[in-house]
Image (cartoon, rainbow, N blue to C red):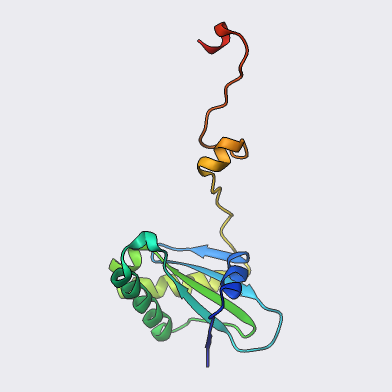
Length: 144
């Protein structure tokens, strides 16, 4: 039996652990350090569409997790399945294959490298190499 994640705190804890991104979804896994049942959670961002679209993506993810053979959800772990735009249109067998491969990688302790979130704020403050320009100031000749 698998329990479901319900509290925001649990989703945030999983977000800071191992991550594996595939075309159909992103899977996050965290070892809780206990011997309890595996817990799973599903989430879809509002960027992907209205409530109908997001619910369709979540239903496909839930069904893919339920029916996937070879999906190894380990005891004492939390898994968060994050829907992507491709989740709604991807072939169902390919989606379940993505889930199985992602959970296998995470159970082996392999994770995707962290992404540089960059963006406007990071570029403005100078924390990221991507994005904003830095002016050196100086004389008028330097700026031309």
